[in-house]
Length: 141
Image 1 (cartoon, helix red, strand yellow):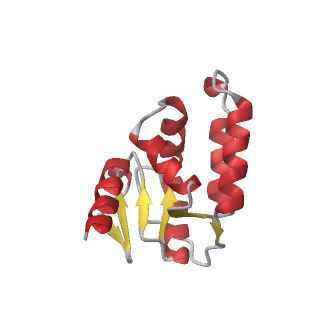
Image 2: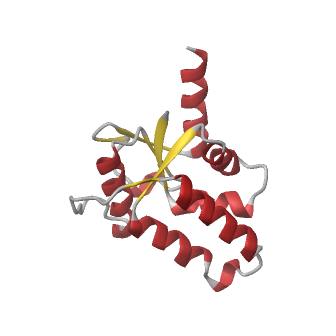
């Protein structure tokens, strides 16, 4: 099964835009087609961001159910290496740390410009649409 780290912006987009590409990515994770890799710092960021005032219009029960399911299904890792690679948003290093520790196949982000490369170790850094294209190509081959 493919392993992926999910940037917080993809999770937020999935909740804000039903029937979107990010929501399809989440559906693949919840349907156990893709294994989400998580670390404590990433999950804490998910909770913090989705708890912000600007997202109060979202259904808090739906958010809590989603976070609970993601937490239960995820492959949890505790990164041993601290990185200082991303300069535009240093907080994004936690996603690379998790990807490296989990040996994830993909890091899926809506902010590719925050990551100065297309691949980190063996993890491809892709947008949600690029992830779906790669997944489709893998299934067809």
